[in-house]
Each structure stands twice: as structure tokens, then as C-alpha cells.
Amino acid sequence: MLPESAPASLVERFAERVIRRDQPPQPDPQRFEPPQVAARVGRHLRARLALPTDHQLPVLVAVCLALMEQPACATSALAQAAGVRRPAANRAAMRLQRAGLTDDYWEGHYHYYQLTRTGEDWLLAVVQDTLPEPAPR
Image 1: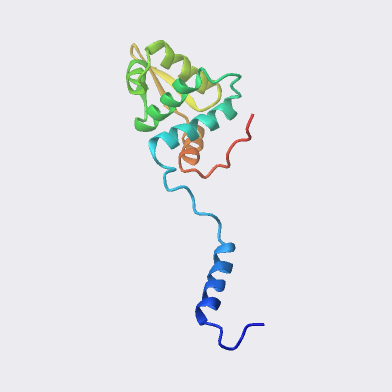
Image 2: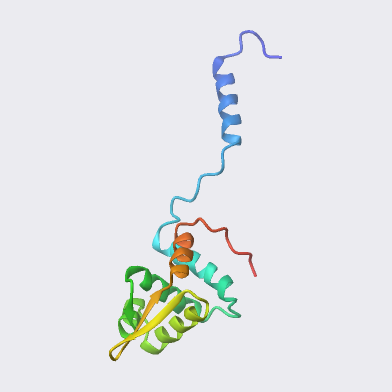
């Protein structure tokens, strides 16, 4: 039992502690920084594509991030935006296409890739950090 002369600050501190206990933890303020976004995209891509190894992951992430910047990219522009060689960008975009995340079309002599509606919705949820983290493998 509290003595009658208990300071009000004790009661206030206890009330604040109980209120904080029931609040969810604050999200990481750095979660929208480019390195954290790229890492999150990588973790989700690894799970979605069931990649056996991580050696393709950096190119896949770079292609996804490049396609976030532009609605459609010719293969050469995609490679430049992703910072990889054209064959690597093409392979990554085709791998993403098999997963339903990208689509392609030809315009004249140029081969273009773009995110599908499913790819856009999925990638938006990943970068906004609203999807649950994939299970570790």
C-alpha cells in the first residue's frame, strides 16, 4: 500500500510505464534509407523466387530498384540504370518475369521490360515495409 504522502510523480511514472508497455515498438527510423530498402527487397526476392544461392540477388535487386524509377526500360537502359551489363540485366528481368513480377514487349528493335501490376503491388508493400519478413532459410 502506498503511503498517503507518495509523490504524484511515482503514480505518473507508473501510469506512463503501463501505457508504453501496451504500445507496439517503434519502427526503425532508418528503414526507408536506400541500403535498408535494398536489403529488404533482397530478403523478399530470395524468398519469393526460392533462390538456392545469393549470387544472383544483387542484380535482381538492382533491376527491381531500377524499374521502380521508370515505368518501362529498354534492356540497355535497364542495364545502365541497374549498374550491370546488358546480358545480366536481361537474365534478371526474365527471371523476374517467370515469377510474374515483370513483363516485356518489343517496340521496333528495342526490347522493353516493365513491372507487372502484381510486381508493382508486391514491390510497393516490400519497400513500404508492410509485408511480414520472410521466414529465414
